[in-house]
Image (cartoon, rainbow, N blue to C red; front, side):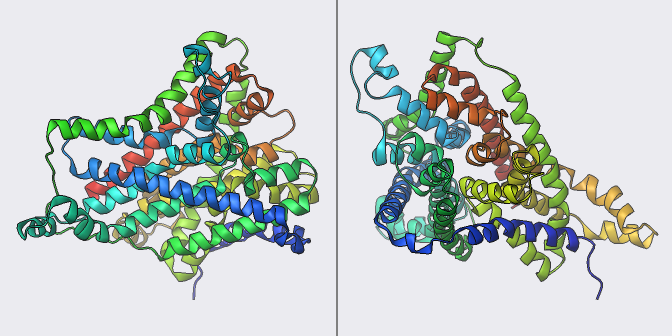
Length: 499
């Protein structure tokens, strides 16, 4: 049997994705420390943050999914963008600005002359994480809602069931998988986030791993990383079992509430949008007006773009054979799934593993190459998914015709496959680039000495207390993240048109 040409590169990518796991297992020698009281406290904090964030995201995300899917609001598309907009702001930026705005000496205290409750600890972390993760639940639930046929609800209403009862008895049971899928995304994001717990002074796995690394406790950091990976792996397994099947056979439900009811809906969720979107932008604008741009070195933005650009190019070069291997058979699909390990590994865990790998290979340690490797391992699945989607829609008869006419496999790829899948390749590269620009944890651990990026600069000024200097990098990261959200929403729009 002939081995597809894409298999060797796909196998190499799969093996590289497993390297961080192997390194962490090698490093984590003190397994008995798993059961000490400090570890149990860290576990309790981490699980509490995860559970409370998931609950908060459901309480906000599910009602907003109903509003954006079924309620006929004026400027409906604009409201959808606004509801999804918190995804365009990294949660650590939200944590930074909420921490700076509230409490004694905060910006609100200085501007308005009265003190507000301090925003830190578990309460502050839950608020921040909920504000920036509820769109995951909203978008997956909304997708499930749009796939339902309105006739079932209409039949229930005809039989005398009220609209609220129809929602609870007819609609919610049929979209529970969509809610679960979004909730798992929230849980995974919460577990992997470092910036928010660190800025909120909450000892979770990610924060303590970073503290142990800085205290040269690499073995303990590795052991904590493995514990976190076990939880993440369990959630990924659950996620793989969830199917969100489409069942549309007719028109979706349409609701026409009164103007007063529409206003009540918007007023109810207005504080969410104000805290998640308006507050960070207002704080950064205030700092920018107060401190100007003179203190910011724009070469930092170039560093971010340069490292992320290299990572994006490498990622799509690797993603093309991995995606083609996934479409060629079961073995290829297994190799593709293995490459998703990196996406499931939190950035702080990836950084910890590759720091040790760099120590064993002095040519890589504290180099830009090691940082790029971390970006590629973490965000390769974004490129693979985009390339595979565009390749799946390719008419295979075009390639067969080219081969019949005498074209070699390489010629058929260069002249037919590549041009027709170029949009997917560019979209995948853009997603890797944007996520690499936002990445904080792995960059903190692996960035070369003196190599500052937008995210690490933001972290340094937070640590130093020079909050005003965060305006430029903060606003740049928001703009960059907004571009990523635009790509994601345009992908959703194309998907809806295709179905």
